[in-house]
Image 1 (cartoon, helix red, strand yellow):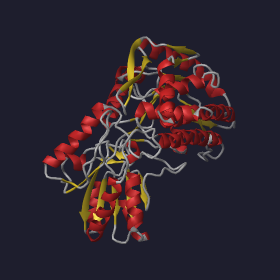
Image 2: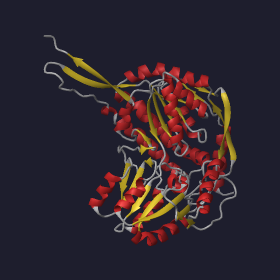
Image 3: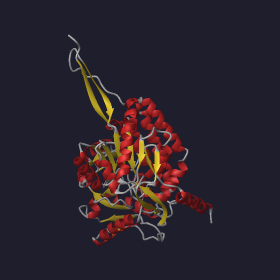
Image 4: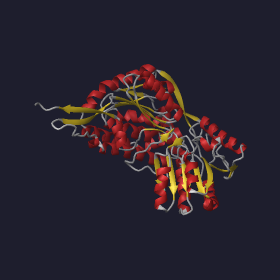
Length: 491
């Protein structure tokens, strides 16, 4: 047995022996719902049986949050910032443990999960640095009066996150509502709960009781969080189907403030003056193969100017075929398994139906590991833009190549989907780059880059890709309401 396998066994044993509980108020609880299994996607082996919340657990967490929110909101922003930074420091001391949890629970490469942990902590600290950004304004609305505004926290915020960045989303998505003065109830995906539950454990003793609760469970847990009348602000990251259901449930139970970061069918557009080698590297990076394409921002549609299509295709297909697929704890693996068997079967269905419809698969067949949810990175050309593969988010390692001649054709093709999250444009023509940025229906656009999220730049989409912006001061302010005060001077 090599050192890597010994280390793997050590981490799997630690997960199996750990008492996985919910964090509610000041307590760690086993949960009153049925325990749910979490599996290693690389081997399909059971990692642990994980405590699950009941409706009563959700209500208890909300009650604890209501009590905690008032005192938390009354603390100074600098005091809240200090505690959020303290939590980031505690989490950083467990960074390797948290990275391993995500690798074993989500099947994502260990080297990438180390980056994810660092990114989550960076964003926590970024929001703590925004502490004094919670400002109001004065308005000269009358000659003799004073008119001013100030931000007020909602009180209790529900934050529901997906499986594809388990720790990074858990850490970064609680930072803004906490900094704005809210208490937070966090629900990770039932597919990948371990690192978020561990975060909840580590937060106890750092944050005041009730300010953060972490609940695990399936859709009924999320629905109960959304329906609770005391939860007035909800933020969700995931599919547009679930996002729209959250909007519906929220409307049935009150007037809720809801932000949604949803899916994408994102276009990367390569013009004839682009640096071809850089564009190919950008396409590999932009498809997020390290996450097996399980990323809302993946550039899964590549639009190529006809004059460079053949050269780009040759280089890109070779680069994709050279990606190493395997166990995510191995240092040279670039692509691990899908999150579970259902995800693998879904992606395989897209591939089979596209091939049957006449799309041409360009990537080579490869031998995949026998166990787990592995899918080969796949590149197609000859895809009908109006077909299922041309329109629907696959959320897997599948890329479609298209060609265009005129700029207007590229714009029409890029915009002809229901999503509008990201877009990437490759050109050395400055005027063209700004024309494209204005014409593309996307919330986050790169020129000569893909995939990079820049600190403080608002991230979010249009159309079915969501509502609201994150990763920025916009996100912080979205967790507050504005109160206006009008002072009329005595005459």
